[in-house]
Image 1: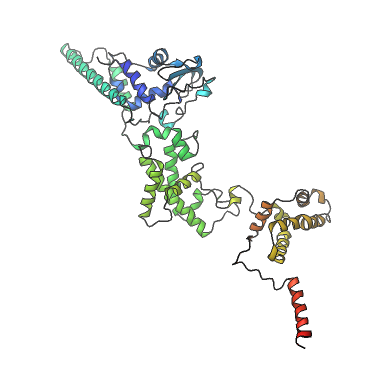
Image 2: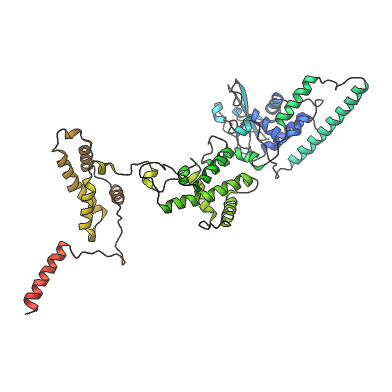
Length: 466
């Protein structure tokens, strides 16, 4: 017995709901309707004699015969639950009653009853592809029911075409120029509908995987990221291509124009390498990702492709994956300098108020090379250097309102931490390392050494030589 169009719509809905991209999440009725038409675009040609199913009939059939109200707390044997709220339609923006449906793929984890429409927000409703009806759903090869639906649709379409041809022949024989029950306006609407909803050429950039939270997390850094993933990736490929131009690295570098953010030649080369590998990976992702090809495989292939052009700085796909993690959120690589990355000024504030302080610190470090430590410098700053700066500030009138005085007094009351002092040392171009066998300190001119040398010379010349 042939399926009616209503029964076929229900079966089509079940196959869509079984897809992992759409199960275990709340979707509004309009999204379900558009998904069915995207997956089975010829379903709308199955004939008027089988009682055409519209959105309202589909919603009524689901709520009445196939699902349970989530607020009732009753477990549904089909794993399908519904909820409805009065609010603005996510597609049209018009106020009204909006139904949401949830398919539990395990049939064991009933969803938490939603209290408001915000608890069942549709993740696909604001997608550009969904709103503009450009979305296409790839066949789920793990679901044999989809083949059954396609066969049934073809059978109904063939029957409809056959019936239309028979009616057309009868109408012509009777002297009528059109089909019974159809006027010219209906034909025009049908042609316009065919243009807007006709099947598009299926390509990897149109499949539903790009609308999923997985795509948003992988390429944009957040499951709730706004924007179309495909469009954003295409834009970022263009930005990554600019890196090969003079100073092109600034188009993909965080805080590239800040003071002190200039890069050395090696850092510029490293940014260029990141851009080359990530650009190739994004291009391959637009071609293959989601079609049973995972991100790691794409990164591996990107490395092989780039290697053909003589680049061999990256050998592991996880390195390219790390590049993506650093780049995906804002479309910018983090600045190599940790201070610039955090937005801190390149010169410490205390150095700006007291230019003589770095000179004093360097003198102290040179005098204490043999046994210098950051903690030793920290003690010197607290006990001698900052009190001396405070005394200098007190020599001027109105010193209490002077920012330098306030800052120096602050460091006396609350001494700078170990990490802060170490950062100051690094900012002056010096580095602190532990002593090793290859580490030599020239202490010949130290006061203790000079005194011992003078004493030994007198003893040698006065006693040992005589």
